[in-house]
Image (cartoon, rainbow, N blue to C red; front, top):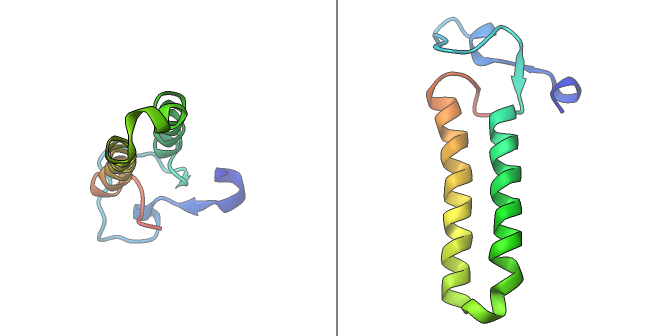
Length: 87
């Protein structure tokens, strides 16, 4: 994906953004976010989605919201640390 999209990290085109811990390579999409999304989505499908009829709609919805929240929090942290741009 990185070789197809090839967006630079934010500090390569914006002098106002100071990098903290990122290299000078292309950084979009975030490999950290891709790994976390794959892991959490797999865990959700394995442990929650398979049992959706047993656990009920409320618990299923809560677990889905928790999974999405964790994925989004990783995305936001990458932008906050200036390792990636919002795009």
